[in-house]
Length: 337
Image 1 (cartoon, rainbow, N blue to C red):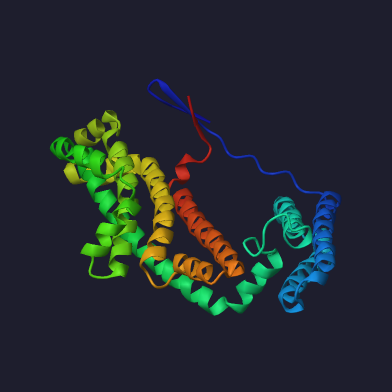
Image 2: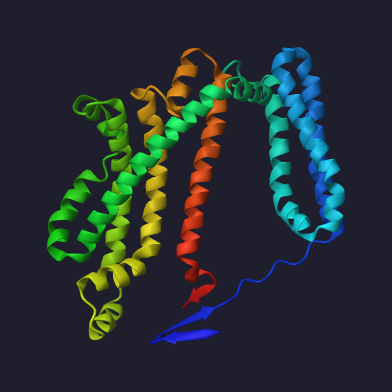
């Protein structure tokens, strides 16, 4: 279906449905995945002879469990088409991960190409994850609270200032120079001043994260508001819309794609600021945990914290993607030319 709006044509296209996955293709993909896990298990059993048994036990159980689950659930793929489709999309990534774990163990515990103890094997990382799980959970919880607090304050401040700068020419005249001077300065550069001025390290960390989020959200929001099509505003004014309606029912929805870009940029900046702020002042959190473990030369715990960070940040980013897709559902299948 093609919809015309003046000189612009918009084609609304329904995304094609993926073709059904055959049983043979699904089982072939599963066998490759199971083979990669079996290879990783064999390599681990060979390498583990020279390592402490207690540190190797959890990794052996982990690989064996993954291989067992893959074999046991194979018959279900024959009967369940949705499971075949899900695994067909997921197994290539999992297979690559299994080969990567195998290579990681070979170059660390096997041939020792990377110097120990700075580069521990995946078995030692998993051992640190399990044995130090309570402290890791507590650190993750504190990092989550700190990140959400700073991100929320930064988003609120960024939306307000971006809306004012984008809508009001006088505010834009005075606000843009200040934004161009203060905004590009990395939030981490303010750490020495924040530690002196702030009443507590927690407050300073929240303020630094909020500052890191505020700049991209403000810039992208102001850009989206100021670039709202004049035709949209003229039509709304013709129908009797007031200023509040023009701002919140016309300009803000039109600026949502730009606003979400700012939210994603701010989220990335908040991750960096969070880790740096925790390493220099806050006495809890994943950044603090990494600094503490490094001080004791517990590099298995350092890598364990990095794994938690990757999963932690990836989950938050995925949630924001879901929110974006839900609010901008009208963008799906739209091609403009």
